[in-house]
Image (tube, rainbow, N blue to C red; front, side, top):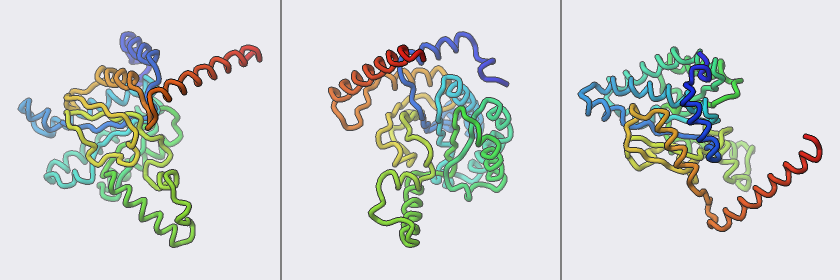
Length: 280
């Protein structure tokens, strides 16, 4: 099923208007929170909440692909989540297995590259196998890169990177003087991906919950009170509009940002003129 063909004309118009507003974030990260609370408030089981949460995953992945987001990283299961009741963990792993089996072909048909980050050795063998198959099947796709953070935590990844750098120093592959931000980043599991521009968290909680701690140094955050099972594409559009109306300074002053923006616009105009003269 082509996501472009199934998109409604009204939704396409909304997306086109958003794109006209300004620059979309290149990389969106999402903390999908509130499945259990959504279910309990409705007299449902936590399992039903997680099942409805998968419907939100489907819609947000499709909308992100359709509107042109290049990277979408979903916090699906943290290392700390292993502390939950064993029955709930079992349900989550089964739902993950079902998602990977059911969605892979459609993701592949729509040019989505599917990958994962986290301590994959902790996952059930069948899930590890499905993740490997998904990665191999979609590795050459050039559309949306969908990353599932599974058995992941930011602190774990940072400590792991430090250990790997220490080993390479011991082996003589790296000198202490070589260690800088770029080198350190190359040892993280997110290497090869741009840092998140924008992090969305549902359920109203205002914390990172050990997610992408290094990568989110200058990422913008958006908190919504909606639980994840309620969060669908129109909510994503609201978040994107909010993001595009922000001024991102990266430690600079507003005056500096405005000056750089004017210079960039002038350079772009001059390039268009040059291209027109050259007949491009």
